Each structure stands twice: as C-alpha cells, then as structure tokens.
Length: 212
Image (cartoon, rainbow, N blue to C red; front, side):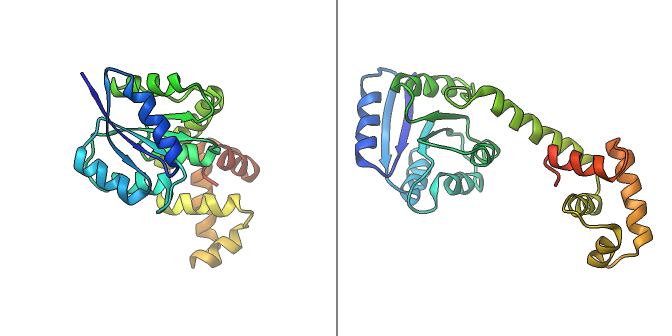
C-alpha cells in the first residue's frame, strides 16, 4: 500500500530534500508540498493524505497553530512533526494536539522514512533524539494532572491554583467573593481528595502534577 504524504516546510531546500528522500521509497508518494500554514491546511483538506510531515516553525502561525486548525474538523491524517529544536512545553502541546511522531532534523534521514512507515501503521514515534525518559515523564505528569483534576470540582481546581501561587485563605476568599470559612472547607476537601497533609504538601503536589 502506498503511503500518500504531504510535506510542509518553509525552506525550499528542505522541501526538495524531503521530496528526493521519499521519491526513492516505493511505498511513499508525495501528493503535495507546502511552504506555509494556509497551503498545508488546504492540501490536507484537498488530498486527505495518510501522513503529514510538518515543520514546527512555519509562516502563518506555525505547526502548532495548524494542528489546532486540524483539530477543529475531522481528519484521518497522521502527523509527523519535523523540527530542528523543540522544548518540553511545545512537545507536550504537540502530543495533546494529536501529533503521532516527532523527528529532529539532525537525525539520519532514514529515521524519518521509518517514522512515516511506523506512524502509518498506527504506531507512535516519540523516542528518537528526544530523550524517551524525559518524554515519558512529561506524559506521566500530564496523565496524573488529568486524573487529579477529575477528582476536583472547578472551584477546587481554582483554589489549588491560587494556593500554589502563594495566596492565603483570606486573599483567596476576597478574589472569589466568598467567605474565608468557605475557602477553609474547600481546602480541607482538597486535602482529603488528593491525600495530602497541609498546605506545603498541596503546593508541592500541584507543581509536580501540573495543577499549579
């Protein structure tokens, strides 16, 4: 089965290199090449490719903005993010937005081909050149934050954020327009739900689990 692929990068030399790389692969066909976010979004909607190879930094809002746009409608296209550098926040945001793989530009070109094949088969490609342990820690932290947040009401999550920022009960009560006693009740319930003992443990828990 041929893997229909759209390639997107704002540098013509990179696009040429990608096209030549895939041209010699019998199972990969480039159906469109794009240089900005608008072109890429149009190509994905027109061709419905199996895989999109997407540069993180592109004119028109960048790769993350394109991912947000794709999330606003149905799409079966699987996405490989190709980038020279990526920080932890960008990496986690890309994963949240549905990226199936991330390949660094300084890796061997064959790794990108391998990533496209694996991702087309339904796998994820998140190890190469990115520090797998660090990535797993990020994903684990995000999952813990989601589980913890599901235990708390919206008002309790808001209070946790305020406690983590250093506010005392009286200041929280003033900001929320409720009584200080009500805040104390909320904080007590939060301690019980998150199984923490006291304010310092709550602050540490919030920071370690992405609730702060």
